[in-house]
Image 1 (cartoon, rainbow, N blue to C red):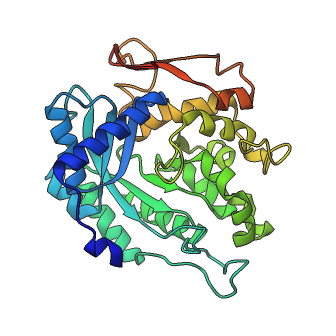
Image 2 (image 1 turned 180 degrees about the vertical axis):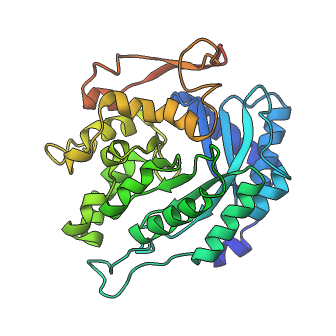
Length: 342
């Protein structure tokens, strides 16, 4: 934070160049649509400049960084789809707590490896509800970062209260939902909640999570299968740039519960694995549904926007190791080839 105050901000042309490079990386990995969780004013202006130039290829579902920024961008509500369904401000991103690795995730009981520390909740119950009401009244979708079990319980409570007033399709998003009290898992199946989760977090965090939580709390950690069994909508992503955006690594992790090294044998808490097909649906149609975009993309079907990729192997038949090694040969968006391997 101290360094950030003195580092010069990038110029608009530098932001544009960086975006084009990042877009190329996404397209090379077969990513046709992505969510930007925490769009700033400068970010939005960059997207608009790129779109105005006709250079926006990937589809972007944008969530403003906090309610004030979101309202400054969208005004009285979400924007329409722009640039041929390439860009839309969908909602607002809020933060309920910090990260597990730094012991900032808000837990109901102290950390197993730090006596007396329970992390930090970023907002009071009333503040969270007020922000969610303010966004919801204007039609913005609400996405709340919640990693610890206390943070997830707080967000669930707010959703349950607001759902009594806002009974239409709101698709409340809980981002990460990494550590959940097993008693709270059933609550994810109510009120149209979307559990937006990242399989690669489980492979990266496994040993750290064991140390932070201890064995007793692992039952609700990275609980993808339990989310599905309890009726939640599951949307998978990568959380790039924290992790690699590679969807094939995430896909393999989701149905094996193993890292790239094949460890641990049999998978980490394998009962929480999902099937190969369920995982791919969470990355594709689930991701589109999570951003109210399922009528436009997320599937190969009549009426959809013809977004697809060509790969060098059959990902359904490939072993987990082979799946991780998948190379994208071509990426097509809206029936147009936008990237090809050279």
